[in-house]
Length: 225
Image 1 (cartoon, helix red, strand yellow):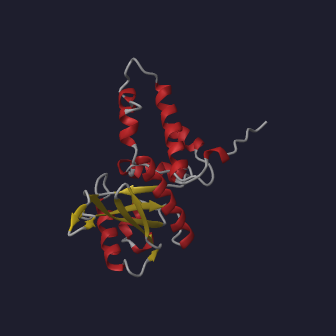
Image 2 (image 1 turned 135 degrees about the horizontal axis):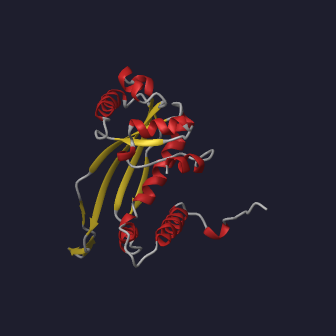
Image 3 (image 1 turned 120 degrees about the vertical axis):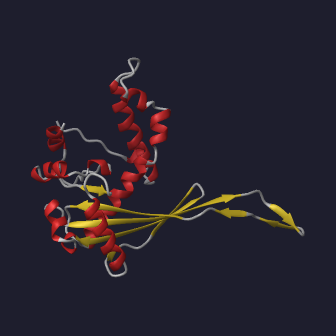
């Protein structure tokens, strides 16, 4: 599988995966095959030290490090505010840098979500009042290993890749229920693996186009003769 991955990755493509894949052995393979990556890391898979050090540096230097303007989305009654930051991997202790020598920067994705539940309008003294109830605000911070140098262009490209990745991730429930991907992955004898591959390609591609506000009929496909 890894050899096929090395062949599949081409210029201007960045490899992304879940944090469970962020391991020394796998990142070494990516580095050896010159595959650009943007990988999240948490405290598992032996990454507790670099996660703690990144937390410490981010919390101490958040106001001065490279960052993008806040991006806010309002979808289905939920307000999401996203902030992206970037700092050089050289800011981390030497033991962290030695573990991942190919990493040049750390990307930080900070997200604050607030869901608003609208209640029925009520009439008070002949005036219509639109009652709203705001739920508790949720806050999360995600860290990514990047092979890009720390600059504004790299941060913009990394933030775009992260947002695209989460747009696909947000539709797992539909993929797993309506398109039955779990059943197919479990080798259900009544379904073909080809259906799984087709679902992933078609559904995720169309969903990405729709959310980006593009007209799918304007797409142009070229075939090399």
